[in-house]
Length: 151
Image 1 (tube, rainbow, N blue to C red):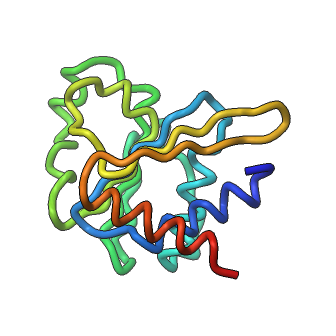
Image 2 (image 1 turned 90 degrees about the horizontal axis):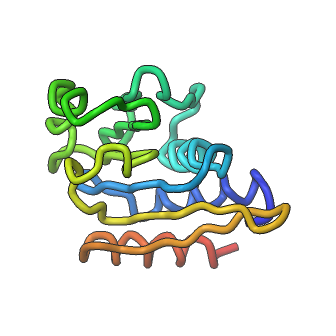
């Protein structure tokens, strides 16, 4: 992924296999493109509004799409108790697509995601390394890769 446009394209390709009842974890240092990827995914799902990182609110809902999508950013999560008292667990269900930036801040409170994408800098470019943790994740990654290959 050489630039922001490629990161947006990867996000749009993620929309191809996105489904309610699944979760996507995005890992990488600050500025690696996590929110940009989410912006592309939401555009791929038909969302035309402003996409912002929920760094301060911790969650941004997008429910007027074909999926009930919840975008989390746990960068500022202080401790386990904040996560436990927030009611976040309720969002991770069969009726929701949950996208989580900085999932490592929630530790073992989050289940393994269906799809995990690690974004990194490689010189002046970025790279993305996907991994799956479920059959749904394998299906999602397959659809994503197929979408990226199509013109």
